Image (tube, rainbow, N blue to C red; front, side, top):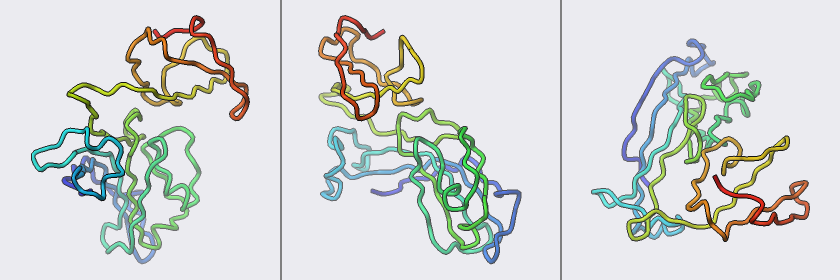
Length: 213
């Protein structure tokens, strides 16, 4: 896998130019990183359905991800920490720098006690989920399409819905992510199960008692 291009959207000083020990002030760079994957390379054989994605002029399957980079602006960085974000949220700084966690997604990054910065770490957060509603607060990815005979792939997908109250409808989505489109609202093979707790016994709801809309 190779980085084919980097599009920088913004570049600003971090935390109003605070100096972090011997490594000085940091800067924040937001943008999109583009990747290319060779489907003929045996090292990539473990990537599911890669062979069913279109290739570009260079023979690579292309995709892109949002990123946020924090790095010393006047000194050479000592090492790199890659933060593969969870549900689009940047977590490395809050976890390592003892910053107060933000329960509401935000584009702001609190520096905390500066543990990583005082040791010269460059920290890059990269989106990897395609179903995240991308914004300044949430990082996502544009994956390559998967097609068979030029048509989108249809198949079985598992969606877990955990309501905190009685509901009559729900998106086919995990938590607050983008929903999966149903291939047909009359799919007789679709099933729905209900259980009272995560590892409890499940009971199938008759297909006649629920429907897609």
